[in-house]
Image (tube, rainbow, N blue to C red; front, side):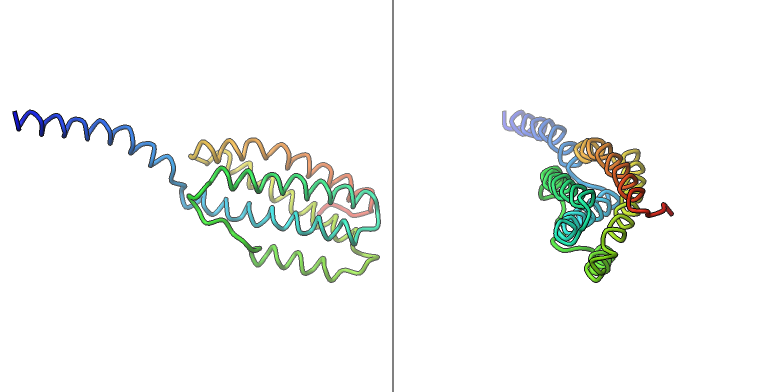
Length: 175
């Protein structure tokens, strides 16, 4: 009888583990996914910060409208990303150095040159974002992260097109 109970306990434990362990493994993010999340979060925070700055310093309505969209869209995307990754990764609370450098550079721009510098930065940044999100969409293993990437990518593509339009209107040539 005792042997039968031990055997049932072992079988039950095995059954529970076969259900729980795959779920736990799915919760883990790969090193590449973690790196991508940190980069995306910092980039999103930069977009919001630059958008706030452009709403104040920008001269043209085109820049102010684009800036408001950056604040709204990237703020929303950042909140969604936090929800997607949950406590699986410590989200950045400050900008990466390269993003901080971009903010500092634009903050130093004169009122007369700000709109063009902002348009250049948005064009450059959204080109990189679309490229990174496209690559990560193909590599991501985590289904929730992949879903967020695939949902966010079309928005970034729209931002890139709007950044191109804004840059063109301001006389900024694409590099």
